[in-house]
Length: 70
Image (cartoon, rainbow, N blue to C red; front, side, top):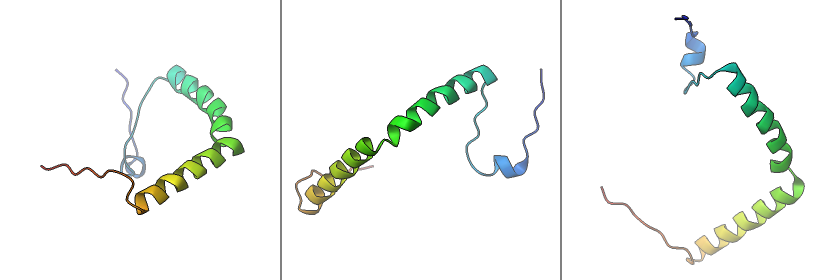
């Protein structure tokens, strides 16, 4: 079994994920293609428009609010 030492600076920053290099590279290659789509100006403008519309509806009371009782 391999032993790995994780510096405290990295471990204390939050969640830590360990996965095989091949899987990491596959995820990275898919993420690079997704980045272009996510930051496409048409997609961003649609998201902004829908977000503003939803916020306006919420402010005038057209949305339903649920509360969860514990």
